[in-house]
Image 1 (tube, rainbow, N blue to C red):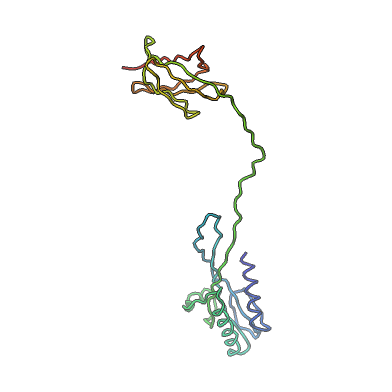
Image 2 (image 1 turned 180 degrees about the horizontal axis):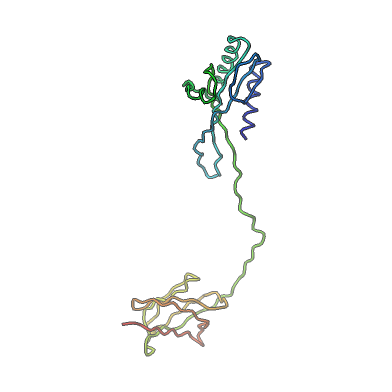
Length: 225
């Protein structure tokens, strides 16, 4: 990723200056060869763009650009051609502030003419796709009625008790005789879970009984108080 930017900048420099060597090493001792040092100082991460898609990674690369030649005036000419080309390139940014002396000290060389070039780097990230659904199985269950009666101690019917079938998001209230009725409930096999609220109390009930008209389900609550 960064190496592609290195090569792109080396090609850009080669299109501006003829017969120069481009080095990615930090600037060192001056020699007689004509050349450009393109040294990567640091990477700065930019805030990610917002959107519905997965945002790309955005960074800024800071390169220290210096030149050398047998004659100082030739090195200055190379540097001038590069900085003018960089200023005219809308993709790049030339920092206006001079490089601190501490950076030259860390590099172990005397300060020399140069500039810092900022180059944006964008890395697209592929969308994370959910695995494809290979098989969809749809089972249709027959519907049937379901009902019963809610009673308290001594089998006294409880009026206006709340009877819920949470699995199917169904609910109803008992009538004056404590009876409740659901007209259409999936006829699933296994235990059926009910929640009953009466007299300020709540009860959870599991039953295997189907609760038909011939065999109504009777729910006897042990009410407190």
